[in-house]
Image (cartoon, rainbow, N blue to C red; front, side):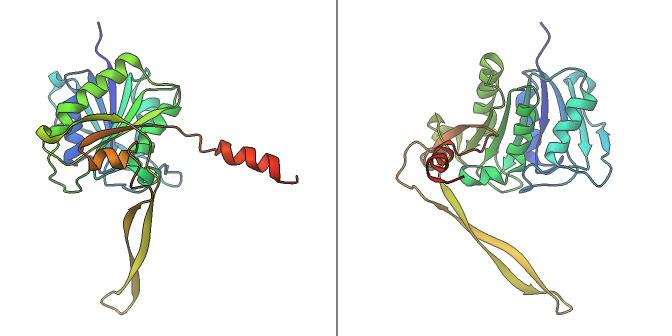
Length: 260
């Protein structure tokens, strides 16, 4: 039987170590097409390019026998998925993988994440199974070996069992040695907040500029069914993510109480 077709992207850029680690996970599973940004696009969520031309550059570094084709794109992660699925592929991929992100995408970070947005874009395209994978280590030289050991099983499960229409998986790995990872937890997104501020500084010419800073606050530290709890307790967290952001509970309240 023909091997599964796997489309891979990320938001840290084509040269990121996490991307290369994900390619190594995927190569034994299927045929791999990589379309990733030329530069990093962290924190750009579901941004798309509309005012400048998009360009693709094929990388020639891959051995033709490895069943991996790699392209760099000057656009965002979502642009990469759109171009890969509409221009480079003649058929729908069996799965789309995004990552491995350098840093966590748990809790509220999911709404800012280019990694998860790329997976969501794939899921919106005829329900293609997709997952974003992240490691809670921001170092450019992070150790991705635990992700490589556990991640392949998650990918195989998604390929075998599929996902519901328009659903992607947000998968986060704790920055722990493989021997200390306790397992995988299916869980929900924690209710958290980024407390943000801007540091005011002056450039060499006396002009002011601002640098974003902030810290994360878990608003439900006692909850044991969240991604934050799982990661803090040595588990890989897996959260199903959907594009429908409607609050159905609030919708029903408004229908009852508002005079329209």
